[in-house]
Length: 280
Image (cartoon, rainbow, N blue to C red; front, top):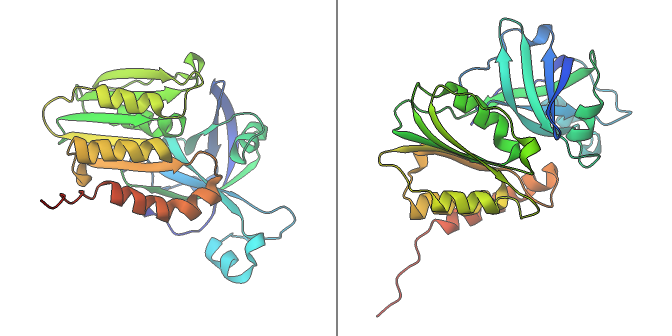
C-alpha cells in the first residue's frame, strides 16, 4: 500500500453535508491541495491529524520531526478515512466521516467543524482499483468501507458485473451508489445484530459467477477475518485478486487496533494454513 511521506497538509473546510443521519461529508479546499496525487486508486485515504491541545507544533508540521523531538504524549493522534471524491479542477477533496453521537474522536470533531476551520491530514495512500481484467467484481463492507465501495463502483467498466453487499444500521443510512457497471446491490440492515453477521451470511450464500473475481472486502476486523478465510480457503480466491483488511476493530480505538493488528495478521495467516492430515 503506497502512501506519501508524513508531511502534514493544511486544508480548510469549504462546506459540510449530511448525506445520511450518521455520516458527515467534509468538503475540503485550500492552496496546499493543488496537485494532490489522488486518482490512481479508488481506496485512496488520508489520515486526519489531531494536535494535542496546548502543544505548540512547528509549521509546516512534520510527523517524523515531531516524533523525534517531542515526547509521545505530545504526538498528534491520527485517524484514517477514505477519500470519497476528488475534484482536481475545483481543488476539492471530499471525505465522509461516520458520526454516532459523542463517541469517538473524529465523529464529534467532524460534526463540530464550520466553514473556514483548518483541517490537517497526511497522505494520500491507497492500493486498490477495480481491475478491468476481472470477469466480475465483489465488493463487501460496512459503513467504514462505504466511501471506497462508492468510489470503486463509479470506476467500474461499462456493464462490468458486480455483486455488492453493504451493511448499515437501518434503511436511513443507505446512499445512492451510481455506477456504469452491471451492479447487483444488496443493502443489509444490522437491526441490532452483531457487526458483519449479515455480510458473512450473504457472501457465504452467494452463488459465485464463473470466471475470475476481483474482490474488495473491508470493515470491522472480526467479520473481515472470517470472510478472508471463506474467500481464500473455501472459494480459492488468489491474493492478487483480493483487497481485504480490517479498517477498525470492535471494542478498540484506532490506537488500540493498530497496536493489536500484527497479532491479527498472524491469526489471519494461521487461518489460511492447511491443517496437516492425521497420521494413519
